[in-house]
Length: 339
Ligand SMILES: NC(=O)c1ccc[n+]([C@@H]2O[C@H](COP(=O)([O-])OP(=O)(O)OC[C@H]3O[C@@H](n4cnc5c(N)ncnc54)[C@H](OP(=O)(O)O)[C@@H]3O)[C@@H](O)[C@H]2O)c1
Ligand SMILES: [Zn+2]
Ligand SMILES: [Zn+2]
Image 1 (cartoon, protein in one colour):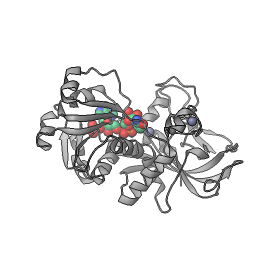
Image 2 (cartoon, protein in one colour):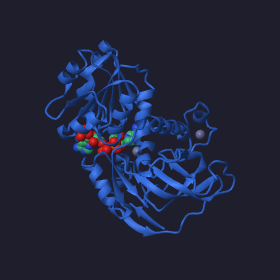
Image 3 (cartoon, helix red, strand yellow):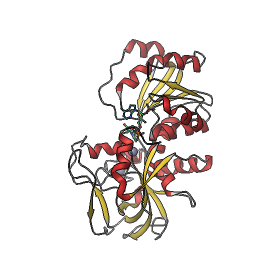
């Protein structure tokens, strides 16, 4: 099989021939159908966490079961059945965090395409505990981005006590943000897209945003106040990986508003505690959850017809797929398609 491997910091994707893996107990091998490119793949590409090479990135994987290891139970042991694999590559179900329900915080800490080889490969070894059931008929390329981009936004929008009609800002319209707009709209929130790119206005409105706020030439705070009738944002989900974006939007928050940061920020935050105190603003960091919740996200998107806007790339163009993402050119998720 062919795999796209990063072998050194900032190095290109290199195609290598490897044997198809053999599944161990509790594992399956998937024949890859599609894999989305996430900004977090920069962790491997740019060696942000100092992890060892070589590594195959990719944690938005859709594939069909090709081989089954010992002890894998139904429905995961059906050859040919399609599953997804997201960021969380394993959870034991037994450690303190797993028992509390936080299986994405499992002590095993196995992240797909980070600690194990991921989906930018013709076949992928996966733990059955990480498999996400995919309803029949969903297009693999359009489903792959739901597994990380979609799922991250799903949790950020669902878990912070927002109410129907809440004013919700989606800051940064990339892979996560574009799906976040569609989700926020379908969850019943008054949705404000906040972007540095004026060229994305029509996209944002077509995805369901009620308002588009440009931060190209300013902070956008006045526009947000106008769009929300002076209320401010009850929540904003920060997807651009820049602390500047967080700091600029704090004055646009409503009383008791929540800033949910999902991006991997480029530096420490500098925040006026007086402003947080006066308006009782909360700051939260949200990380993508585990397989059993990911299924809920996929089902939600299927039920409401939420699909990412994607650009499809053949496997041999994986470098181009990554470059269009990292240079903010892709509209809005690069997906590598294998067949
Ligand atoms: N917490 C989690 O579990 C989790 C999961 C997945 C991803 N992430 C992180 O979330 C962030 C967003 O990921 P993504 O895949 O959505 O990224 P993306 O597709 O690259 O989108 C990021 C957006 O940030 C804005 N941006 C502004 N200036 C930029 C610049 N100089 N370069 C790149 N983008 C710029 C752009 O939106 P505008 O043009 O609209 O300004 C861009 O579309 C990343 O930090 C990623 O690592 C976290
Ligand atoms: Zn991701
Ligand atoms: Zn565990």
